[in-house]
Amino acid sequence: MTPKFESRDLARIAVFAALIAALGLMPALYPFGAAVPVTAQTLGVMLAGAVLGPWRGAAAVLVFEILVLVGLPLLSGGRGGPGVFVSPSVGYLVGWILGAFVVGLIASPRNGKPTWWRVALGALVGGIAVVYAIGIPVAAAITGLALPEMALVSAVYIPGDLIKVVLTVLIVLALGRAYPAAFGRRQSTPVAKADADLAEARDA
Image (cartoon, rainbow, N blue to C red; front, side, top):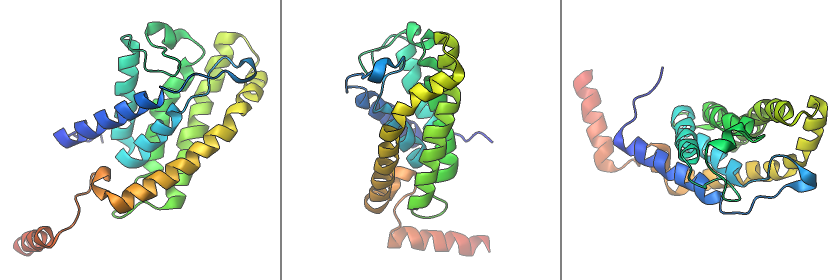
């Protein structure tokens, strides 16, 4: 079931779309002549899913990519515009949306603070496996390389992506301790707890 977004949800989505854009300020690197650049923006995708949850995380990535589509140079290396979506990178961009959703499904907290293993697993499955599963075949089709060859070329991205998984875990756990409201949970206060207890008593 698709959730309804409240105004504070929209604000959080906008913040993470801006975070992904800010991570694009790092220059694009094309190791060993790769067709798709190394980018720090995958870290933003992992964080969006882990903090916002599946639907809001995917929405943050989608908002970012709509801004890229209309021409804003927000991808690493100052890339933007419709041409990006017919380049070898397009599979990865599509994978980011689904990847953030899967990260959120696995990593987002369940009635409590985030746990390191859920965040790590979500980032590995959604932020790496899902993105690669879409990005590599599409890049192979566009460049004309054989799928095994493209997969081998793409292996150069794995060490950097594993570092992003570690960073995602550290950032999400720190955020969970310092600012639980970032996950959409309001911090508990004595007054709030008393109000909740009163409402529960009325419903009983």
